[in-house]
Length: 139
Image (cartoon, rainbow, N blue to C red):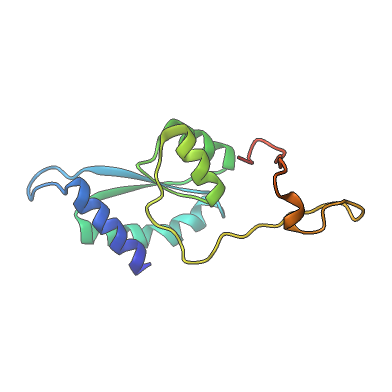
């Protein structure tokens, strides 16, 4: 969390903090729905409160009941900052040119399933092949 706070501090400094006495800028911080909104609020609000205190800005926490609501808002650019998954980062860039600011240190991993009798047995079998992902949530 300290790394995220530090990087957000650098971002805020880069875009300019309001002068003392000036009206604080309000930013919307949208969070991918992972649990019910009440649980998400309990997890995220203390972090945003600390950022507000350290940065001198106001952060409105935007939570969602459904993934569709979150995706619609992200596509329309409703959040100034968005916490999301790697596939949503691609969608956010395609729709609103959002840029990732902070990422974890772990390598992104995924799972690919094939039929037992498929000719594809390992990743090398996919070299120079087109892979399609089914569903509107897959980018």
